[in-house]
Image (cartoon, rainbow, N blue to C red; front, side, top):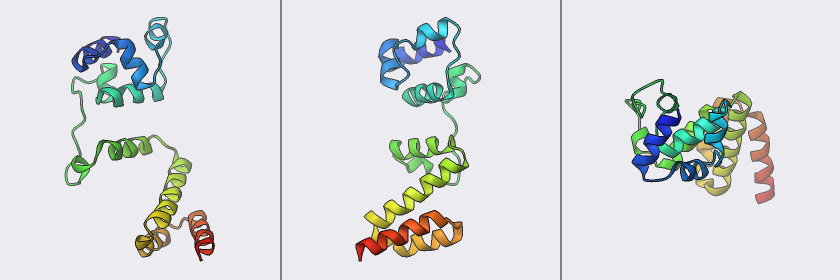
Length: 143
């Protein structure tokens, strides 16, 4: 893995230390790995996002740096921050995903009230009781 990080750092034009710090894994990352520490999934994810490669590539499990984007959708048109949100969502457990959905529905209701009908329809389909309750409370406050 450290060989790949070295190659990717050179390609990006940054030192390994800067890559470790800028990615969020910490300046001691290389020392820890060299000493036999196993990196957490979170740190692998941070590094892969920083270098814009898959974790498989970073770990040397694949020679293909980026995943082939799914066909038949608009993923290629998403902005980087939108892709990062979607990629992060994949790592959540069901409880975390439900929480994100609830927060999204509440944010849409607050900042895009013109979408209220669509939100209500989605809530009915998905059955998010907590989100429904919070949305109702929010409407009472707004009135």
